[in-house]
Length: 146
Image (cartoon, rainbow, N blue to C red; front, side, top):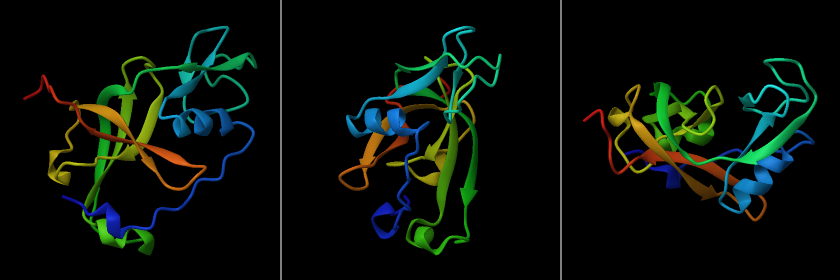
């Protein structure tokens, strides 16, 4: 398994669009931006809906269960801060409660070779400092693809 204790993760800097996302993550909850006109979920947050261009956007709670939509295995340390975790699986997850909203994260608590498109995952939260908690993913207890 990848040893994330040896990695020094960069700390995200919230802005006016992302602050509600980070505030909910700090409470170990997930809220994603949803268009109030067409119902489209999107991540990362933007000032307008990427589907219909509405400006009526709100953050709504969603669950952290989903499936791996895409992944890549990182074998090289292009960013030296991640060198201690190599090799690791960087994954894109489509959440069950927010179809179309894709979240990036890492597969934790499992060998990187377990990353497969369609595998069920669940969100966990990794506290980086007093202000930032990072949503990440681990394999779900029950995986219908096995």
